[in-house]
Amino acid sequence: MAGTDIGTIYAGSLKNTRALEKQGLEQMERQLSGLERYPDYAAVLRRHVETTKAQLGRLDKALEAIGESPSGLKETVTSLAGSLGAAVHASAQDETLKNLYAGYAFQHDQIAAYRSLSVIAERAGKTEQVSLFRAAVDEETRAAEDIAALIEPVTKTYLDLTLSGAKADS
Image (tube, rainbow, N blue to C red; front, side, top):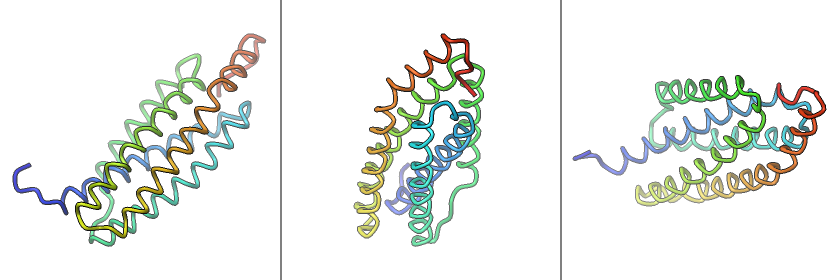
């Protein structure tokens, strides 16, 4: 990366984070249709869908402020990766649990991305954006905590449904 400047790194990080958020949004929206037996889980995802849409809006504004736009290629690749992951989980007996685990891990991936983006934005002199990225860290941390709180209850519901012969997955 010889010759790469902080502006290029910042733009790339914004695009990567936006692609990651877009992937997360698509995964959550797909999962929502199969969670009628898990209303608390669905409620957490619905809340985070709205948070993610707001985060995407902030990322778009940050990109516009530097004369950039989202990377269609990165978003296509991450969307395909998300679709592949969802397809793998859908073929599993315990799809709901696997999606829950993946969602928990994904929140931590986003926390790391926003923490890194905050540092990059600061170094790039985009101090007006740093507080927004740090707010996103807080939002993602709350989402991770909400999902963590669901692991045991969702697992219990999954077991109750499965052991009674009822349909536990979508």
